[in-house]
Amino acid sequence: MKRKTVSIIKACCFTEKAKDLLEKLRSSLPEIIWLPLESKEELNQWTKDAFEKSVPLLFISAAGIAARIISPFVKNKISDSPVLVMEEEGKFIIPILSGHLGNANQIARMISKTTGAQAVITTATDVNEKFSIDNFAKANGFRIVNRHGIKKVSAKILNGEKINVYIDEEIAVKDSNIPKEIVLVKEITLSDVAITTEEIPEIHIEKTLNLVVKKYCLGMGCKKGKSFEELKIFAEETLKEKLNCQLKDDIYSLSSIDLKEMEIGLAEFSHYLHVPFETYSSEELQSAEGNFSESDFVKETTGVSNVCERAAVLSAGKNYRLLIKKTTGRGITLSVAEKIPEIKTWKIEGTK
Image 1 (cartoon, rainbow, N blue to C red):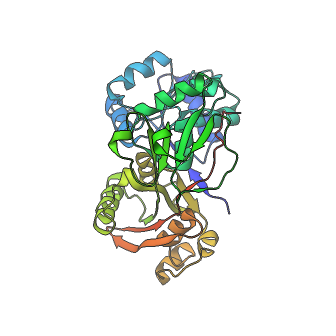
Image 2: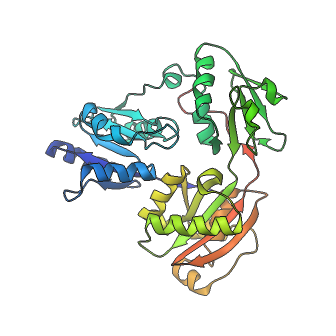
Image 3: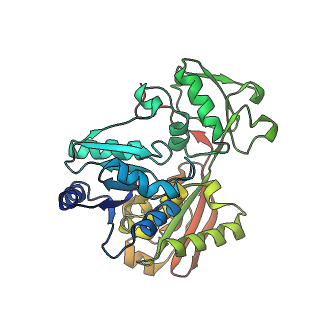
């Protein structure tokens, strides 16, 4: 079964030649939701809105123009929007902000592969083909508790040193191909990185980078045109009431049916959460195993009797627990499944 991960990109251009290039990008990558800057939109507000949702930004312009426009909104590497620049000839695509955690490097490689533009990657671990701890955290859906620790860990790796990694016993290690830069240790006190199910005691934070497993898979459905704000408020209220958890701390994935793959509100919500937006066909949803809420109306509309519960458990994988059954309100349905804590991959794109 293949998960389809959907992306959204806000694009900005200032010349006719740049607009022509944007149209070529839209034709080459129709699976992307492209949101060009409209003539009626104010540029600063447009950029601010993107940063508030962590939505990727592509400037088809000089890099200096992009740098000046985004500068008031840049805060930190965990929440900043990924920002890329492409010159109007379409020869180069350059990530300039949030290359790892925001996936700017990955977006650049995707555009490069599709269009032939050269991806100019400048992050040190990628340039040196070294293990990247923030890329690793992103790929496995871990929350970074203390972002200052990333710099320390990356510096050791770039200096040719090994890093000590502690992993909670209840976290399954699905991939045994551990990178050469990593040594597994059994004590947090010996670790440079601690991968845990709960935050480690504050006494260890200065020395140890703490990665915490995000375990909740959020399945959602909605009426057409539901906004990011409506989806966010409904999810926040439901999760606080039923699980007492925080959206940005605990959500591993957002998923729905493929009929919703171009729903802008859902795509924006996934970027805000810094999680993949996975969509499944009705046949894939129907194959999910479990006891689900049934709706004849939903089946007539989508081809499957329940979307949110089935999407949540497919994203969670085997041995899931359905924590929140179908919850409905304001034209939105929501369900949450808990996945087993795991390290699914050590291999990160751009490394040896």
